[in-house]
Image (tube, rainbow, N blue to C red; front, side):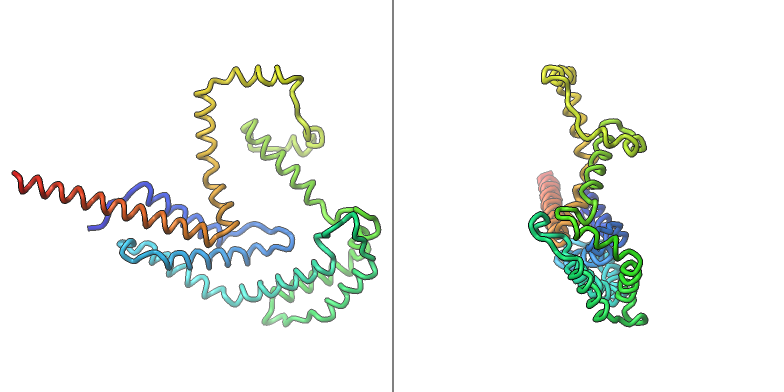
Length: 283
């Protein structure tokens, strides 16, 4: 007889489905980091981890069906993933030509003529086939178009020592402010922060006594209850962060947790059955 459904097993199955959905619907598009390619590699790690799951544990065939669908998706998109990987390598070569990110922005000064020469040489060497290598061709087309239209603006940062090549640090700061405002106010919209965000970078109380006085008005039980709710609400996002950092290790841990929990339930069920049989024989 199969082991009865358990809340722990259901939670792990839900996390596996969440990992697959995240890999298929990857939304991150960070500079010089191909989101779709990361999703494919994440799906490969999921398939590899599911292979380690013993067949005796998967009595209902649930994970076997998932593994079959994952393998079919990998096989269908393997050629596209290979093209994306090659395009990503060319993207890294573009970054090298632009000296991005700079190792020592305050000490190393690159001449704009050298950068322009490197980009022109790369465009001359980068000749993908539009029919077979579609991602590479799109990348070259976008690079050539932007280089022709915005060459002077792109090279301006090499004329001033210490001038950053992007505004990612500023965007990261305001993203942190938006997240903090949502947690503090409970409101989903952060439109006010876009208008007055520059005035909300630094917050401080009038004195430590005032700050401590506000903290003392919060009951310890209410604080612990709110902290537990916040921790529970952040669990899915923390799981996704671990999955993006190391998908293979995260999925392997899920498989081990599922196997351990299944074994524990199987032993518990066997002990209960033996006790029932002993009671029947004694009667």
